[in-house]
Length: 360
Image 1: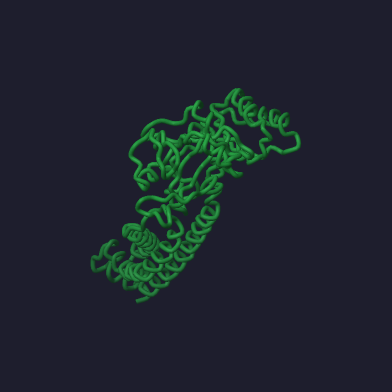
Image 2 (image 1 turned 45 degrees about the vertical axis):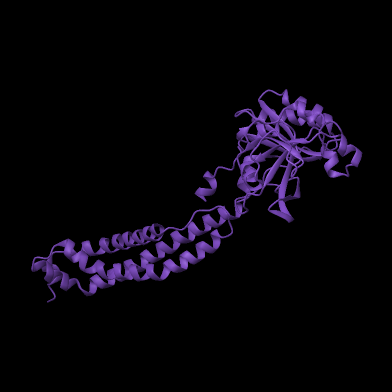
């Protein structure tokens, strides 16, 4: 879970407000402009895709020289030119979109409907951004040239990013810019500390454009976290029951030690008279319990490894189980056992031998 919380997603979800998909009715450009003018808003984007809400806007089979029969499934994400800035995609090579490049490209309406042959012939090749993994997979080494496989011109290579959760591997992805949408989500990058004011002012603007549609929004950072809500609940339950079981085990060990010291109190007295130290008496008692801990660890470790490995297999991106994790658990168990034994044995070892041997 620490790995999930610290994993670089390839984009920055912090401070991004996502407005649920809506029918634009041809008013999306004016809406975006008014939202952008709000104080505290850094950038605004219209998008046909939102992180965590699916792989992409659509998928195409791209035929390559190495795989002409079946083709490679490539995800297409459709958004306006500001989407890379709002989501913080990192350009590794080349550049991002230019607004002038959108004039002659296919719109979102073309992708959701049928494009006539005459319309397609008139269009210039689309400008696209392509992820580093996709560029490597398709063998794209040159930017600014028309790629016949994609029927588009890659202008920049961006870092691979996780479109959904870490359970799924990153897939070949292309980002296509569009300036027209039939349906779109609104992504708003908000400056820290301005969230409440932006939401209040956004609600007013929204009611002016779409009075019959309620404003539905989510913070992208919370959307990312919500993907792992089940795992967080499991973590809390495991922690609670682990502490409970450890507490019960400590009570059991303490009871055994109390019984053992009561049975051997005279033996402890004799050893003290013969010069035994408290540490040697403690070693005598603790050795038996440490052997039990070692046996328990031997039995539990394979079971724990199998269970945790099965759970981790649900994730494409994860940590790997290391031997020191099980050793650390064993050492912790041994320390708890030693502490429990020591409390009672040290008390018994410090008794005056004359009292413990009086009945003899």
